[in-house]
Image 1 (cartoon, rainbow, N blue to C red):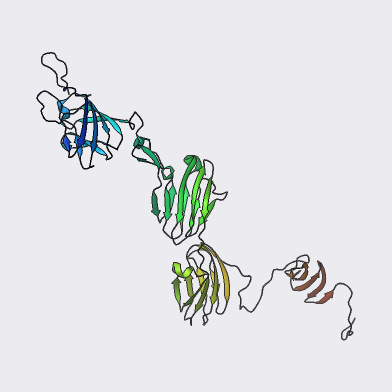
Image 2: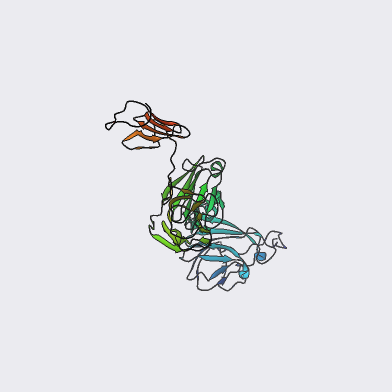
Length: 409
């Protein structure tokens, strides 16, 4: 919409005031410099503006009193950001940071507010607008681009995507999984920060066969942190930090029957002693983390003590036994060949060249089981003694200083 002269048919333009210097001490409503304007509020084509407070606004004249294309170049020469609004403060055209310049112009004028186009200039000269250039991992502060590293906490399984570039993710749950989008999708030089501040192990796993540090997955224990970087083909960690806190203390806990779930503080004790007169079987539930436990079952009663993460393999201890248990965040494995306090010892069969019970300085000398119902002794890898259900067989010569009696030779 334009205003035309009834005499010439040409568009009527406001009087062109080329330049104004404005200091805002309050919100200023500008008017078009047409004939008859007497107040000092005329809009100029070029305006250098400063303000003592960001609460003061510069409000443009009514858009429907000028032609489309009517423009103004506004430069903020002060130290406070200036907001330029449409007529009457109805809407914001642009907020100009200190030292920046913006060119604005009317693109539609059916109402007083109209529609305004915006072109950003640099500081003191033409340049790019930082806000329009800021991508993933970047933040526009004034007219500069700055590193961005926002922090996000999460407690349920999550898949990291391209938009997570440079983000910091903090795990706050129990056991969980962080899945990385395909390396080919994320591309070379994508990266993110990760920290496990939860109570369980956080597994970081790639997609589509992608590896991380050459493995299908890595596990971050509570307190661990790392930077995960992508090469476009695979993933690596940089600065994988391991928690240095290791509470080698003992938990002494009285139990009777049923299930007991350890708190994080209780589970931090590597040595755990359970006492009490059992009236039923007891289950101890430990956190789903990678850990080693030294368990002492000092209870009494004809019942068992089972240690579990709630899933996977469990360890069962009878009264008066001890065990060293290794937890892989799911399963619990007994690190002992026997339970201390048990009434028997089980050995592998072994062989004549590698007896199952041997000497560290001479591993080919010891005892082994060559066949069913047989007890054998090897000396330097040679069978010199075999005791079977049918009798004794000694291979080699014998020296009997006190003689031999009984039987037939």
